[in-house]
Structures are given as structure tokens and as C-alpha cells.
Image (cartoon, rainbow, N blue to C red; front, top):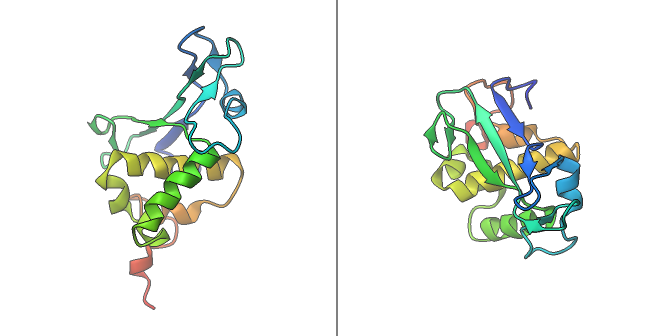
Length: 154
């Protein structure tokens, strides 16, 4: 992501356990998820076994980036397991226009929850090394990838 959009950074390695104050790596957060449980939003600390909701941070130097505290601030996101993310995305896509709505920058700007889902999707695609450039189309000032679907003449 940083190669295409150098002004964006996703930080997943600064998770601190609220009980024992141990720093957890991205791999430890992932290993602490309950497998196949779409109702469990927590991870488990490998040091003290406490369950808590993990977070990650998205930052950008772009003036148009809107974070948790408004323009030009970082966006703090809950980290979702693949099972929770799938459940949440199915819920969103079921009552809207599907993937086209999800790819729309306006959809992400409507609610913080939408932005959190979208950044979790980008993060999951990056972690498992899936192509993700289609998720970024039309999203940023640097238009190095395909235009949004409505920009393409059919």
C-alpha cells in the first residue's frame, strides 16, 4: 500500500494488552482470535490470556483524509477477525447495492463503521497477499489505479 500511496500508513504492531501491558505483534493478535466465531470481536493475549478488542491505526498526510477526530487525524479502527468481517460485510452488502456500494469513497465517508469495515478489508487482503488495488479505485487524490465503476463507460 505504501508503495502506491506513500502518504498512507497502517500500524498493526502496537497492540498493548490492557492487563499485562505486553506489546503484541500482528501475528499474536491473529493467533488470539476464536476461529469460526463471527460473534467474538476479541483476541487473546498470549502472555496473560486476557481477551480484549484489538485495534489498528490508519494515518495519512493527505489533507482530505478524515480520521477519528476529523480531517488530518489518524483513524482508529477495531481489528476484526475474518469471520466477524465476513458477517459484517454480508450485513452491509445485503441491504445495499452490493460491492459497488462498498467500493464507493462516499460509502466510507458516511459512517465511521463503514470506514472501519473497509480498512479491515484492505488489511485482510494485504495480510493474506490477495490483490487489493480494486478496493482503492477512485479513493485518493493520486489516481494511479483504475477509475471508479461509474467513471467507466459501458
